[in-house]
Image (tube, rainbow, N blue to C red):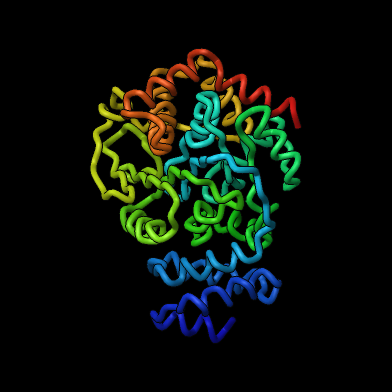
Amino acid sequence: MKKILQYLFEHKTLSRAAAKELLLSMSSGAYNDSELASLMTVFLMRSITIAELQGFRDALLELAVPIYLGDHELLDIVGTGGDGKNTFNISTLSCFIVAGAGQKVAKHGNYGASTISGSSNVMEQLGYVFKNDENALQKELDAANICFLHAPLFHPALKLVGPIRKNLGVRTFFNMLGPLVNPAKPAHQLIGVYSLEMARIYHYLLQEEGINYTIIHGLDGYDEISLTSDTKIFTAKGERIVSANELGKRIVFPEDLAGGDTVEASAQIFLKIIKGEGTMAQNAVVLANAAAALFATQKYSTYNDAYAAAVESLDSQKAYQVLQQLIAVQ
C-alpha cells in the first residue's frame, strides 16, 4: 500500500485494472485500517476518475453475493449521500410510496457513514431484519412490492471498511460506488448525487449500461430533489434543469428537510410521514422524488400522471401498508 499511496500522492491516477486489483486486495484484508483511511483521504483531495470508479465497481460486482429476484422490472431510488445536509430519509420513504403505487422495488442501502441515519439505520430501527437469502427477499417482494438489500451483506468490502468510514465521518469514494452496485441489478434507477461533476461521471458510466437511469442533483448541493432550489436531471436523452414548482408544486426551505438527531428520532420522522402525518413540505419532497422515480420507469405518459400516482399511494395509506406488510412477512 505504501507504494500505491506514494503514487497517488504524486497526483497520478489508477487505470481501471489497477483500481480493480486494489479493491480486490482491500477485500482480502491485505491492508490495515490506517492504510485504508489514507487511501480514502486521497479521493477527498481530488476527484475520482471514470477509470478508477469503473475499476472499483468491477471489483465489488465480482465479489458480490449473487442474487436473482425474478423477471420483475425492479426499481431503486438511491443517493450517494455525502451532501452534508442531514435530511430525513427521503429516498427510502420514496421507495415505499413507489411500491404502494404498484412498482416493484429492490432498495439497496447501508448504514450512514457521513450522516446520522442512513437507510439501513432507519430500516433496522423500524424492525426490518437484514438478510441476503434469495427466497426470503423474493417473498418480501411478492407480498409487499419491496425488499431491502443491506449492502454489507452483499459486498464484503463494504462491511470491512464500514467502521473506518464511520470514524472518518466524511464522504469517501464508497459513497460514489453504492448506487452503482445494487446486486439485484434493477432495470430502473433514480440516483441522487451531491455534485454536478459526479452527476456527469455517472451519466457517462450509465449510458454504457443499457439500464433506464435518471440522475438528479439539487443545484444547492443536495443528492436528491430537495425543492429548495432547481434540480438538474440527467437521462440517456440528455440533461435539463427543472424548477421546484414543476417537480413538487412548491418551494420549501432547508430547515423543512431536517433529519433527526438520533436514529430513533429519524425513525419517528419516517413513520410520521409514511402515515400521512408529515408537513406539507416533507410530503412535497417525498412525493417529488417518488414521482420522478415512477416517471423514470416510462410507464406514465406525463410527470404529472406519475405525481398523481405518488399522491394516491401516500394519501390512501398504501405506502404505509407496504411497510406493514414488509415487516410482517419476514
